Length: 397
Image (cartoon, rainbow, N blue to C red; front, side, top):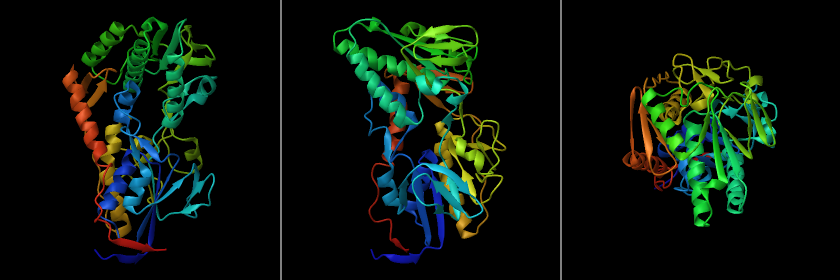
């Protein structure tokens, strides 16, 4: 097929390689917009799919199974890929400021960077605990913990997860499953490990229904995980966590899955942020401050829809975000995105078993895990192979 050359007329810059932006890249790759150049700026070239991370920790998936290769996706979309840290946005001059490269000009800007652990609010947490995000830091620590457990022959290793939402519950059960299997393979006792889950609330999974909470309480009790309720951590030390309730918990390893907010550099952009530091957007996923800047996923706080920070919304925002970016460069009216009021959450229990939660409904079984596995693999397959005959446009710099 003969290529058509188009001069670059508009620049769309995507900050972050989150679930929404991979959808944007795929959509523009399938239907390129003449004269529009995409630029992706992100810290890592492999972006994790949140739905498969617990399975990766459990050992059900490899690193490649659970991550999207952004470099391959960028090539398919005809996008420039800059691996760098974003430090700010100069809205006056229409540029994105980076740590190691010159400012990147934009006509339209979209931000999909997820949430950032606010560990600085807890003395010692930055030094002595490991946040689940960014995944690169967590993965390095996780691999080191795996090796540490494999070498352990005596004494109890105490592992704590701070945060008892779906992410914290999945993480503690996934780590326990994998590490106990590692010990069993070496002929060692699971008694060498002790797991703790800390919730600042008076319940685990506070945003889910009572049936699901009760099910997970039973699973955690059966697995011997020590659950601490109303345990708001106020200080971390090398070998212990201190809670506002007076509880002091001795630990050897602490993972942090709570108190997430917006990235600090957003404070200097002049964009309207909510109390958590997230970017306030309208129904069209435009910031309410600047029509040239969009946001999606966890970093976005929809003005008319208070949404839970869940990967399902970031994934589903990909199509309306891509379409509105396209309509914006075409000068067409934007379309509103209306998220569903209820959604299905599939929460794994470490082994090949999962619990489904939706509104007041809750059900579980090995079949739910296999259903979740099918959904997750189907999603990842969309970014594993690309048609070779779609892109016929070429940009003239």
